Image 1: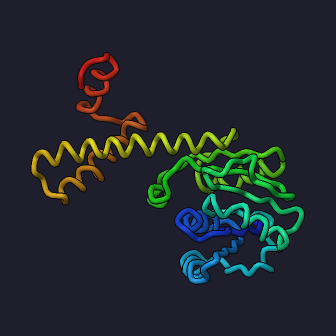
Image 2: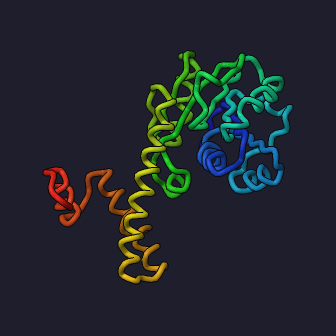
Image 3: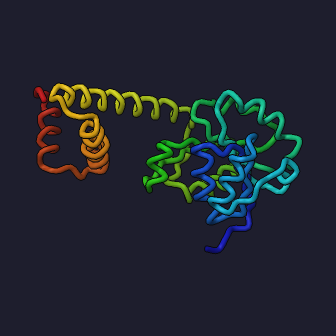
Length: 227
């Protein structure tokens, strides 16, 4: 596949950083960096990205911070001396507010409505992009189109979206687990039911593709009846 000439560096080789590296390495020259060298080496082997030393970061036009919220301020302070003034710094940490990205560089937040494991299996997320810099915002939107659908907006809402979605997903799974345990079923069967039936039904509902049984439940619920 022909690569774009842009050079991207991903800082952090955890679950989401690894996923982004796998997707973006097909389209861009990619560097990866992690405080634990073995993580960067593993990712380099799996997707063909180059392992970045801090001096290599000067080559990058786009730096994506795939880091935990609590380490971002320190990471930005340490990285800035190695980056060019024209570099675009991208924060993807869901719970780190866009207004708190303190940098002299062009800053963009690109926050993902999605689950890393599901994305790895082919689910397409929505990425909300925010920046006061139109040029930087446009470039990052183009990059993240290789990951999923991209919208402009206030990125801090993504934390609320993912929290609500996770909370009610977990509550639904617990309800199913408790109901099935009353049937004295094995953990293997309960796990299969949650992973396949419950999760599959929720996905079908999300895209409006439920069967007659599920549709009858929906209709009854929407009419205010007891389900």
